[in-house]
Length: 159
Length: 480
Image (tube, rainbow over all chains, first blue to last red; front, top):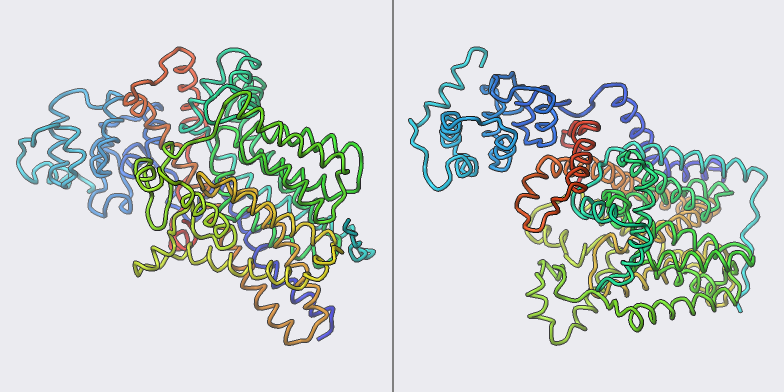
């Protein structure tokens, strides 16, 4: 092999993988700027999806944009499960299993009455989300019919 | 004194290689710039700083920082206040643009120091830039928005110092060097590495600064210590201030005092040794042997393995370079490449020493940047020697270089992913900011603080919402 070709071979070995990574990163950025979301589930489509994914910033954004946390929203099957696809944002927050997230909804005024608080606590008890139970029903176990709240969610049309 | 041997003359196509190198650097800046603009001003170490910086006058703020306990960083606060005032309330845009501008300047300074005029230097540059942005010590300079990343400022000072020191002697370099040293030392403590760079470059044979310029550097360092310890009585951080990695565990301040309160020297020696190893091997991290602990537990982490392999290969090449050039070093017939590698060794040693009380990745970022420079020199040297050597040797070199660049490519991907992850985590913090502040007994509830919180939260949550999280097995291969 001549020195020239050997040189090119060595140069390619040293730089080609890195140039490829740089070009790929720019291509990724260009696709994303064009509105495509490669290698992801895409943006959260509503406040219930954001709640299920535990994305506090998206929850806040969508709430402040006017989305109703108590309305039943469609949730993609890969986010909670294939059977839980129609939930309110508050129910989705129960599935996130984070007491802190439920507190965020509470601070934004999304849990206006004791009945709703109790229902959410029962759902949290049904799926053993202890942190959420502790936030919604501090210091005591909520009195619930085991499985009933979960059954109501599952029985929704479209679920 | 040493005689500086001229580098081999560049060929007629020198400007082509230089142009190509800067064009590639521009692509790297564009890729990372896209990721960097996604970082919001963060809550921790940032929101409170902005509230503090927004009160009083610039002069009062800077003067007040000369009288803090443990830290002497007045220029950090001055810089923060100046950009804040210039922004006219458009904090997100200004602080992000500032950060991207810093990264761009750093990258361009890096290329300017490498001075790629020949084929081998241009081909080695992608490896060097990958080590620059992919090194674990660099992560803290881009993943954290304080909102001005102080460590990035110090890196710029360090590379500017190297650029001054490696050029021809000029009186203005002495003046610029003195200004740079003062600015860096009063920004953050690791700025004291700037005088080290000037002195090390001089010993290595570089003549950018005159003898008077070097004497001024010594005087400035002496003046800094007198000012800090005898005039202002600022002192230095104590053992009880932070948790620290030691072996396989983090030790809380109480544990540190219990184990080393009577004699902290073994702890300091451990930190210096850990810091040195971390630069060359990417392990331990912040004094903690994370990858080793993972391996001993029987689990395998692909990012940790990738880091180790990439660093081992890179360090081997730097050691090889030092070995091949040992006679020139010994007889002080150093060229620009030798000087860069020698400055790297000096900066690494000094950086490890100033980490004696507390070591973490980002404190070692100056050593990391010079490691990337030394690696570029070493790879260029290997390319040159392998091209003119025996076919078998060239084949071995080719395989090594391919493994090296693939491993560092992986680290660069990890760096991109880390930035994206950090941006999402910072937005999570803004989502929960009210809850965090409600739990703090001394949270600032002044009108200025509340207005600033609302604006920064709105910037992070609504005006610049989170980008979709990336999914897939490949993410786990690379993301730490």
